Image 1 (cartoon, rainbow over the protein chains, first blue to last red):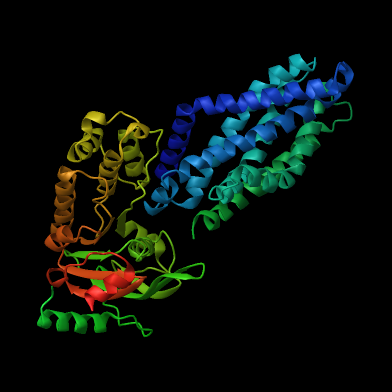
Image 2 (cartoon, each protein chain N blue to C red; image 1 turned 120 degrees about the vertical axis):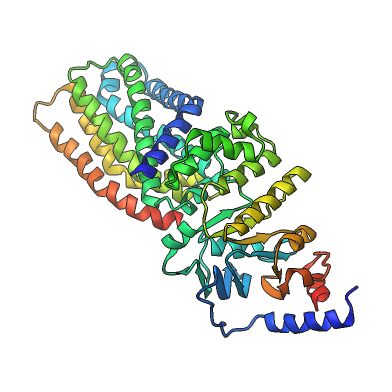
Length: 221
Length: 263
């Protein structure tokens, strides 16, 4: 347990030290939301309808930057190999990294929420539900994202390859998160919200253990 | 110039050490014992049928020109990469089947520093100690930093360090665990003369506490002074093996030159 805690502490410390990068990731997401509002034009109803979709596409695109950068630090001086040779288990490295990524994506998502509300003139009837979608959705992006970031970290064109691999896999996440966000915004008359949250929970229940297992095969030769 | 007698004995040793397909019987009591190790990168054999035996409390020099396979050999022995063929035992554990045990018994000081640029020197050592399961008190970490003459820079970020300072910090990182097998890959690189003495002292200390030390370096004179056994690699093959004191004066130019020099 102690080495895992040390790995997590390292991840959080590195994120804090490189917080300018987190700010850049947020700025990227914020600009994406702004561009969507320009693309749709002065149509408040359309913006409100698609606000959830814009938020999650913006967050997904911004998260790939954060995920790739997080692994770049590990390959800089072969630091990841150094941890493995100190007998740190690959799954400990994975879970420390995935939790840190979850936190980072969640923070960026939470920071994008007010922008979405203001920019798209979105009413916020269920902030608790919105937060729950954000937590579950960020976890669902972080689990496979961490694995794919590790897979592409040694490749020269990693910034292109990571979204190419990740985006098709997280289609169900995007679908469920967008639906659940829209229901949290516009009201859940048909009581569908829990179904979509259930999809996110199921995705997490499958991918967190699975990616933890596969991570060892990715980082170990 | 090598005398005729010395030359013939080298030839005999070289003939004994020339790669072969039938793996030698590995010595069970040796700290490091490998037989017929091979490793391929794409179509190129970086390591071809390398065998060696290193005893506890001894220092073993591994030398050869750039690209001769020294780093590959060390990375295989440290479990950073797998061998394609051959067998090895490290501290009694099988390299292929007992990798987790091997890792607990080997320290590799690689020419990669294994350091995080955004962490300070102290934080890097603290992290390595915690991950390795060693409970080092702050004063012990400062003592390690003092040992490599970096205590006054303990709270500076690694990103601000020079290449030599990173090397010293890498050396301190390698000293966190006291494993029975220690592999130093080019430990003298980027170091000043005081750094050379520091490495020599560390190698000697490891050896005295009973660890087997494998030292890969181009600094043959240094290696000859502090090592008992030696091995010369050229194009991934072992071309000479014997007592370090008997090592012919190599210029370590191209692989062909090295092979010519030892035969």
